[in-house]
Length: 343
Image (cartoon, rainbow, N blue to C red):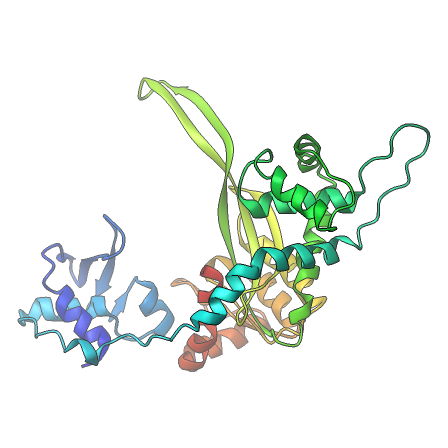
């Protein structure tokens, strides 16, 4: 009995499994409250992601089969038979790295900021703080995960250590955070910080995540008769190396921006420094333009098709279709590299 058959036998005990109509059965999700999947016993299909990726029998199909047969659940195998593989942690090295992290970050950050040029200051008056020192302070403020005022001692310690020439005050940092012209500079710093791993990384994964802000939007909702509020957030799109988890490119957009249009830019930025062998991403990135962009960078795309996708399309689309349909083990082995970008 394979693992999916075993899970299906256990899932068959769920009383929420219902016959919908004809050949259709509803199987509830074990991870999403109120969600579920539709199993077609005649077409032998399921709407879950596992079936769409493997095109093979999933636990939901097994659950329906056991439910219809009325088979009693078999005992769960011994714990040691299904024990998850674990890896021993090298605690002395881990502890040493954690203890030295902040010191190492401060040194490496100084090296990045050394290349930042400050514009000439014409005329009279006090000269502004060098831009490299300001950017250093901005990054240390974010790295400290505390407010600008509370980060002041950490930044002052960097001055004492010789990493900063002039101490930027927290109000100065706040002003520079509002300058849109700093976005390209910070983006370049992210890309440059990954270049020491050029010889190691060749497999990459893309995804996006949300970051909450301190901004709230409030309004009065006449439907519910009360004031409503919404916490503002932005979306960060990133390309990550699958071996070291280093971020090789990043873009920040509004919260309602789609993921797919951002992939070509991430690929272009990464390919400037890295030799890309393959790129994995979820279904949100599936498009003709994205597959072409990946292949133009010399990489192989590993993006799963949607349930309504067809085999017809451009050359890159057909190549991925053949890999997805006829070499599933190879496809899944590369596709699951994207688990690293999730973490």
